[in-house]
Structures are given as structure tokens and as C-alpha cells.
Length: 305
Image (cartoon, rainbow, N blue to C red; front, side, top):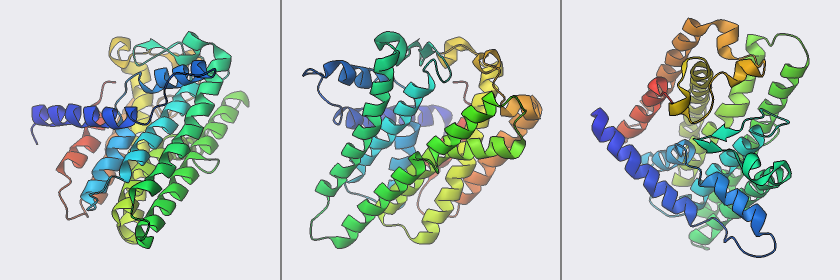
């Protein structure tokens, strides 16, 4: 696929996902409207919509055609957004800008930033549960697939997934000893890759893919997630703040050890390509058309923001 055509299709798909996500956002009204406003501000700040896009494309690749995927598309973006809201807090990364504008806590205050993140995590599962309303009550297999998808999403977002990775990340910063490569890869697998794994596998599960296909996509998500995070570490060193929408060098300023500081810039670049190639190779095992999905994977290697 030509680069221009891919970029046009990418924008079209992102716009489609934005419309879907916005249908699940709550109205800013009632006595609790401040926290709802902060939640919506966070979700509507933009972004690549990478995780719902991976979920949708995997769902379609595996033969999915229904609308039960839509609540999950919104839910995974809400979970991702809540993690960013909490990451930006003073107690975590203490970042003032993300996606080219002030972070949620800078606009609404630290306390409301915490509550907005909490609200988005809870709203994610309120939203995902709506998938049950989009399948036939008499279709036991469809109901089972939705339940399995919920189980995967919850697990990948929890203490054995994203939150677990964040825990090790925070503890490694405060202990005063260099993190090992094994620990850093654990952080990347859980903190970043787990939600990408959820995106790929939930899409496959809802489409009715077999166990071996789901397993292959879980491994694919691990490779892609690690590559994505290493590239993020690289961009913090060599990126442009105008393109990134946030200051570069924040990891160094916070004395945060990254893949670049541990392994060096050249090794980091090589490993981004290696993990990405492995992910693409796993994707090649699927017979259905996955040209856009493959190019989406590859575009992560060369992204500048």
C-alpha cells in the first residue's frame, strides 16, 4: 500500500473510531459534571487511537461483522487514557503537557485528575458491558465470546498486566539501584504491551477466532508493545517536542532509566526493528487480508510522535 493511501486510510479509520468513542462519553451535567468534564477532556485530547484501531482491524481480519465490538473499542481507549491521566500526575511523571495541550491535572487540579482517571477506568467496564446488549440473547456462543473478551480486557489492565508493570516501574525508580534488562522488559511487557495484547486478542475473540489464532495474536501484541515502548524511549531522546506534543528529555529530567539509557541508542533502534519484524511475521500467518494492519505495525518503527 502506498504511503499516501495508507495515511489517508489511517485518518479515515481514526475519524471513524472517534465517532464511535464519542457516542459512549457521558453528558457533562449534574452535580458531578466537573469530573465528567475532566474525563471527556482527557479522551478528546486526540491521540493515535492505536489500541481501538488494532482491535477493530483484528476483529475484521478474523471475520467479525457485528457491532458488539464498538463498546470494547471505546473501553480500551478509556483504559489507555486513564493510564495517561494518572501517569502525568505529580506523584508519577509530573508532566504538564500531552498531545500538545495541558494535561488533565494541570487544567482541573491534581485531585480531580485522580478522580478523572478513576472515573475513566470504571466507565470503561460500564461501556464494555454494553456489548451484551448488541448480541442476540439466544446466541450462547456470542454471549460467551463477550464474557471472554471482558475477562481478557480486565486481566491485561490489572495487577498482572498494566498496573503491575507500572508498579515495578515506580519501585525501580525509587530503590536507588540500576534496573536490569530483564526488569525493564517486564515493565514494557506489562505496562505497554499488555493493553496492546488486549486490543488484538479481544478483537479476535469477539470475531470467533480459534485458540491458536488468539495465542498468536497475544504474542504479536507482546512484540509490538515492546517495540512501541522502546521507540517511545528513543523519541524522548531524539524527538521534537513540537511533533510529540510534549517536552522531550522528561525521562532524563526525572532520572528515569529507559531502554536507551540501559542498552544505548543504536541497540534500541535495532531492537525496535527486530521486535516489529517478529510481530509482522506472526501476522503473516493469517490468510485474510491484513495489509493495512501490517503497514500500521511497520509505521510504528518510523513514527516521530
